[in-house]
Each structure stands twice: as structure tokens, then as C-alpha cells.
Length: 253
Image 1 (cartoon, rainbow, N blue to C red):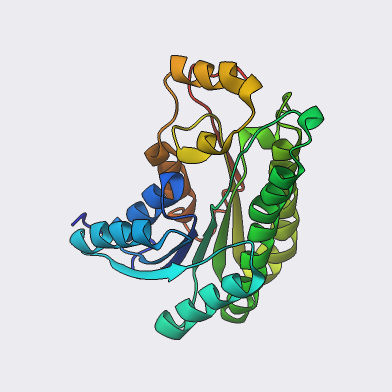
Image 2: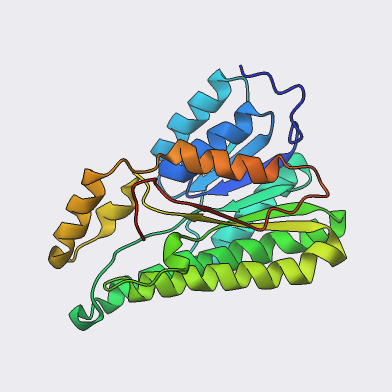
């Protein structure tokens, strides 16, 4: 077990959505190793059980919750379950997201709707469910996963970029509303290309060149983004790390 004696998040209560793989998986494990009690949420329960085993082996505490962030009731049930078990929520990491890139002219409207539902509504639903508890306890930290695509628009990324711009805008508005009044910190994490399952959702054949490009550079790893999240949440209470943008060294845009 990693020594969490001096961690600022020891015994804090954290929730990570999209924890079944990639950034969410790595973040949940990092939080647990730092001494936080972690609720891990996703649709794929089998993958969550694997993560639960890892967390317990490291000496951490974990709560597995099946959750589809596109469903408001699931998000509310997630927060309720954590409150029932541990009595509070100190950290919420809104990580769940999908990236089925495509050109607008391809009219993959079903995929657009999925992105809006997961990338935007999922963040809104989970945040709405947790904010009343954080206001009541006058503390908390909300970490939202945006993307470099929330700053740099590219062809075939119109809708995806729009969802990540929305996350960044929402996060800044949330910070202005809640940080000074209710002591709730807000952080936006904006990764560049990361080696995760995100690209598996791309069905646009014309984007094969993009996928090949991602294989030619040394991309970020999930642990790299987990480290960025840990930097934010482990900062002293008077420090509000608002934005962290992380690109691979070899990524140009």
C-alpha cells in the first residue's frame, strides 16, 4: 500500500464516473492509493469489479455502482448511495465521455446525440446531484474532463469539440458561482491525445489517417492525466487549480 499518511485527501470521499477503463480507472486507483474512499461508477460492472480488486489489494476502500450517466435517475442514485455509505462527497470526477468523431456531412446524428447525452448531460446530471450536498457541507471539489478539443476545433470534430467547449464553459460558470460562496473548488482537465478506448467509438472510415497519426507519436497515458487530477485535488484548500491542459510533447495542435 502506498503511504497516504501525509496526503491531503486521506479519508476524503471521492466519486469517479467512467471508471471502467482509461483515465477513470487510473484516477480511481490513484485516489484510493492516496487514502481516499472511492466510489467507482460505469456501465460495465465486470470492469468495475476488476478495479475494485486492485483498490482493495492496495489497501483502499471502494464502492462499486453501476451507472449510466445519460440517465438522470442513475446519477442521483449514485450520489445517494455514496451519501448513504459514507455521509458526504468531497470529490466528484466527471470523467465519463465518448468520442465518435465524424464529418457533419456524414450525418451520424445518433452519434451526435450520444455525445451530447454522455459528454454534456452526464456532467450536468452528476453535478446537479452532488452540489446540494457540497453546499450543505460548505466544501467540495468538482473535476470535469474536457479536452484539447474544447479549445482547438478540427474537421470531423465539430460536435465532439462543441461538447467539450460546453464542459469548459460550464466549469467556469460553476467556479464563479460556487467557489467563493460555498468553498467548492472546480477544475477542468484538458487532455490531448491519450491512449484510451475513446477512439474505439469512431466509425467514420475517412478518419483512418487520424487514427494512424495517433499511432506515430508517443501519446499520453491514462496515468499522466490521473497525475494531473491528483495535482489539483491534492492542492492545499486555499488553492483552486482551475484548468490543466496536457498535450503529448509530439502533438502539434
